[in-house]
Image 1 (cartoon, rainbow, N blue to C red):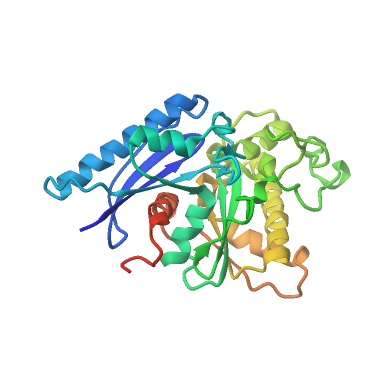
Image 2 (image 1 turned 90 degrees about the vertical axis):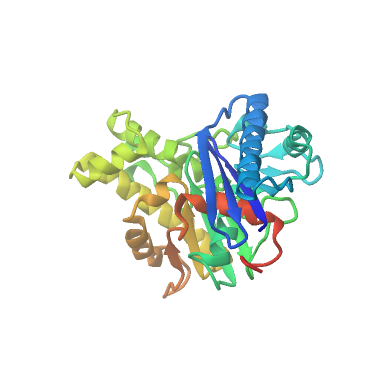
Length: 321
């Protein structure tokens, strides 16, 4: 039996998983990400891969054949320089991550953007299975996107296809249009990339928390805001209503440009169940069509989808093929 290793490298955690040739996860481990320290990041990923190797040998009763390794990162590899660009784990930017990791492991590795890994998993046998055009979104520590065409990820000429999070928030609201003036959307928030009002600054987990803090003075993490809204807290509810409208505008721009059959949300904030009801209800206000048939769905494989997609980077066929 063949095995594959997938690694999902994020700004707050790193997860490794070992998959069998049916696509089932037979072992997994998650650790905190030392995302501010590049050498520690390389070492942490290498340690997880080595641990996965040991588990594969155990399951194969000592067979020394090494599994393939695929890694999803919160950025992309620049095809001209072979260095990372656009990663919200900023210690990776400008570094030869792929080369350094292959040196540490002594074998070939495939690396792809984490949103591309998410949509790779979901078009294979998940929420976007069978879709000719699908868009995957990561809403976690950062906010990114990935495009799948006819069942395959499409990284693009510059390796940035689907980099939705670093476009400006569409149809920005003025102070007068918002429930709270401190939630302004015009030159309101500066992104780590140096520009103002990127989609990421509003729709990432830190972006949600920052918006609530600006509006209320309360320093709450995203999950606490969601819990407060469920309890009937008016301020938390107002924050989520702003978030949903911003998500509707941002994804409407994707529909206007790409017209996908399915949009799949991944990352920590994809667990907000009300998004899948409320955001599509808002789309007709923004999409350039009198009817919107695009589906907004959670990942079928939950928070394992990214790591599964990374493991599939070595496969040119669907699971089991």
